[in-house]
Amino acid sequence: MPRLMIVKTGDSFADVIRDHGDFEDLFLAALAPMAEVGRDLTLTVHDARTEGVPPLPAAEDGVLITGSHAMVSDAEPWSEALKPWLVEARDRGVAMLGVCYGHQLMAAAFGGESGYHPDGREVGTRQLRLTAAGRADPLLGALPATFPAQLTHSQSVLSAPPGAEVLADNDHDPFQALRHGPRQWSVQFHPEFSADVMRAYLAHQREALAAQGEEPEARLAAVAPTPEAGGLLARFAERLALTPSVA
Image (cartoon, rainbow, N blue to C red; front, side, top):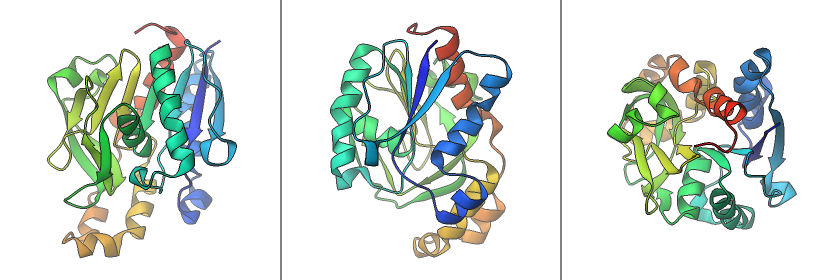
């Protein structure tokens, strides 16, 4: 039975945790349909900040790396320690999906660059586009060519790692989704966020958005469900459960 490890890299806001759950809880909720259809998959959570570098998964296993309020460019010791672990896991063929902080950390670990976006933060329900590679991708190719997703980030992947395929972009960010190998993906958006979680995040960022010339109330009004993007986690886990260690 393949195992799927959720590598926790941060905590959400206190009110989000109270009302909706922390990052790992949102991931586990998104993966609940797997249990409902009887898929054999063992789920574990490992907090890299307090538990150190995780044990290296077996080649047939998978890893999900969560978002965080930390910044990859701050190079915190626990985060830097994950970089060689990610490289070794990738080289072993472990299936991986990084989300937001996980996306930026994977890119930095594999030879790209992550840091503050020169145009500021991107928050809210935004439209993304699949590239030609994205439309042909076995994971992201199930999405529409243009699709809405929930985003909240001030750092981005500034340069993609050598050999990475760009799977999705938008006018703000040319690296919204990357494929780093046969079974290794990362996305800037939050497939685990519901519209209510997105609204809660926007409530925390009104002043920051106004300071960069955006209208927070307009962003709040534009929040909408994103079921296509939200299905990404279950599709990743289903591929792992059905075809372990197969690209």
